[in-house]
Length: 74
Image 1 (tube, helix red, strand yellow):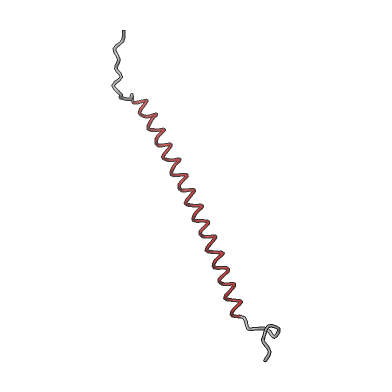
Image 2 (image 1 turned 180 degrees about the vertical axis):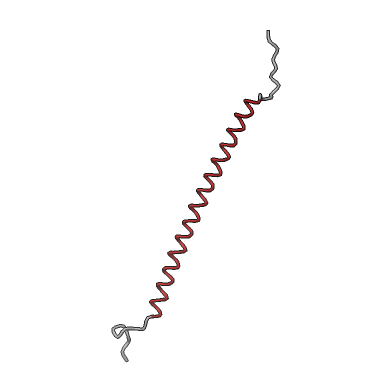
């Protein structure tokens, strides 16, 4: 009968394997977080561009002089 040497320690190969798995998970997590924040940033830019276009459209419409067809008659 062989003596059990299971003292809850990993061999160097097991440690490298576990460390590689952990670091791969961390890298995937950061990639996902980066993708989420990038999409959020692009959506915010798109929203701000649309908002600015609407505001500039309103300003140009208000700055134009009234045409004879839209002027009120006394």
